[in-house]
Length: 190
Length: 275
Image (cartoon, rainbow over the protein chains, first blue to last red):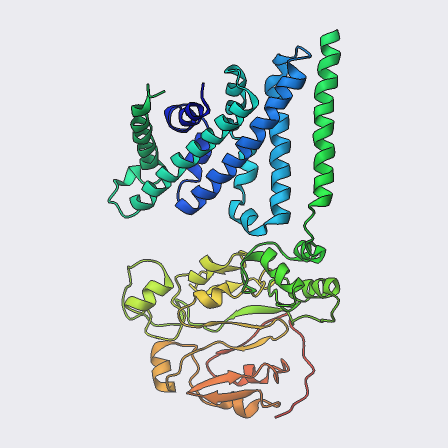
């Protein structure tokens, strides 16, 4: 499978949020403003790439040779949590501005199921290291795309005449559903 | 058995490696924050009321440590906190005198005459902006308790006479009630002061009598009686200069309207008369 197909697949056809329904929590929580959506999306993309590379190494050089694939979830969660902590410290030191902009999002990413899901899917599909990284990049960009799309719509929704019971989260879920429906149009592309 | 050992060792070593990496990173990437910020935050009241003018206690602590805010800038903590904060940042401060809110109106339901019935929202600001409440006096307490609602420390309540009462032990002089009152009836006064002129009416005696049985009629007896010259007359209203008042209570005795009130339990003060 060519790298471009993997990228496109993760980005659009099998979009993590809108098609696979992973990582819904930040998708609804951090999609009120485009600005914070971009920050969250890029932070997630970054963590996805780093974490998937780390989990691929763990899987290939520790879990498989020792016959421990049943420890996959535990080992991956451990590594992802450690990675996120590391990234957080690194950002806090090197770029306080970005650190403040991401704020609570970074620690939140630790428990984002999209990242764990991505690591496990990469193993299931038996990707090589490069393929895994490209898959993670596509997944992260897809997550960012979905987040920005919803945030952009929600920003405009503030000026719309929304029925009272649907205001806030209600209309956001409906919009998210419609977005998901739109993304189903990509099905069969790859 | 073998699987268990391999699992233990491999997972253990992954965890140990991560822990080691993280601890090294936490040293290497440690961001140096002023440790005094945390210390100051610890001694602050922590209610994040914003009375200091900063966005919460943490922000105030940061500004104190940075030299932007004064050590005694927390009106809620008072002298005690000011001393602790001052000790942390290494300056001398005896802190501000502790203040409490005083309600400068005695015209409750019994004393103040009604001009009609107000049945709008029970909020002083709305009442003041629409019909001016239901009392004749346009300077006095409206009696709808916006100050009590604003108090974050439960230090105020409305008594049966429709006037707010300050529980001085609980009052922290945060000033929320002062802001909430649309008629500027509440002020912050040094806690040791016990003599208060509880009226804000600027009308002459005749009109005050028509509106209220306890209002200041500007008879000037208190001004003449006061041995330290702490009371003066301005715009038909006796006013007290707390810097000079010694709590001698002579004005309380001569006030014909009982406008001037002595709070039981406060002692005499020694002050040098400068005026």
